[in-house]
Length: 561
Ligand code: ATP
Ligand code: MG
View 1: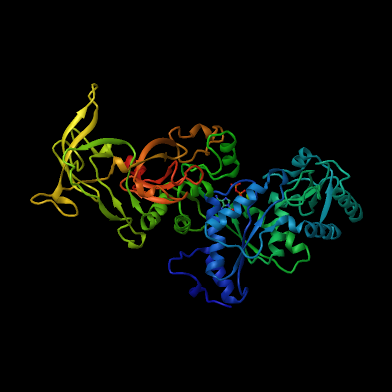
View 2: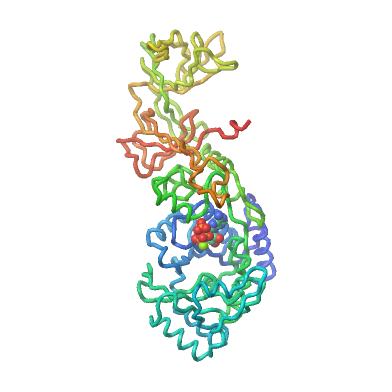
């Protein structure tokens, strides 16, 4: 089936240079359909930067009715694990994408990669080198000086074939020899100065076990894997721009019918956090966070546990766009996308995080009232908002001496209790230290579901009836770091910038209607923010645990004003 690009792109799509290239390739007939891939290394959990790459690669395949592969780049056995590989698949699926066919692994191609290496040797384009890593560095030259040829560069094809076979057979120690592409030691591009394409490493591999003791290098593996899969557009981040000549060199010099084109875009950097698997692993290992899925982590599993939605993350990816210029984005952009998505879909309930007790002195005859879970989504249903003689309100919603413009509760003042009566504060009861510990209030019985007569009541506050409120553990998250670019100074450990107040756990109260919520249920707690039941610790009908996903407003922006 063919599709015209303009019909494929949804109206909300923001064009970018990669889409332009694809559209031109489809229009010219260079490709009848496109194949992209997402090629993570299973050496950690995916983060928000990967989410950008996933949305790009899978999104292009969707929009242009092509295919996108999930391929693990599993060429570094020591760092890779099954746990990581499984988490990556789960994250991609959770984000809402489906890869074409089975999951693919670079290790599926080890035998073919080996055969292509033999082809390069036979063509005099690869050789076995015995230099030590230090010597190789020395021979490589610098950005300003050309490198020098290794003394082993002139080995005969026969000798190279023999040595390479013996490398595979395990006759040499780890690191004793490497296979290098024979390109140009004087190239201004250091990547072309006879790059290593195979090394000896006796490490157990998650897929191939101990079958191999030589492993192909990333640059060599990646282009061939792309070609074997018929990838049309191989999209990667800008740090690979200088590797593109090597990508092309390998494919130009082996017998393979397909030559994918590599295109580079800029990586996402998100302020107040870190987008590097290595750094995130450090946070986990040093126990600065509870794990890869700690809700403060910028990992996909962390964002999920915190309550972010796949739709919100995809919208974020759409808004930040794809280009070659710096993509350093404030957390507020991500939070806004999440908030806007939750606003549309999350049922609204009441919770009290910092309670102040209210006694209603004229509660006799007061009634409960039904209320919608969402003003614009009647399909979410209704629940009963109970009333009672004892209520809880948010301590912040009362001020004995109110600041100018105060619309909440104050002695002698009236407010509307959300979904309930208009209430007046008659008296603030204090403890010996002068702290307000209770309010004595009265309601206007004539105001349930209607406006009071003869006066306007402006403020609305949320509340809970004590008798029906349930205790809940509430986890309030703030940014993980106190500075926008925690990893910008090479001389300072980024952990120095961890925000000590990134997690506050409080005991709060929630309305009864959430009692049986499954893990990962999202709500708006009216006036407080969006919250999500914890995937790990929340027990429906038992211990209730809520994560604050995001506040209702961007509190950081306010502070800066
Ligand atoms: P990290 O530096 O965090 O380890 P990586 O690039 O080594 O990331 P891979 O598993 O190789 O991690 O990444 C898979 C894909 O995701 C690659 O195509 C890579 O370019 C892309 N990617 C990784 N980080 C980002 C980012 N911050 N922004 C956009 N794309 C990214
Ligand atoms: Mg990588």
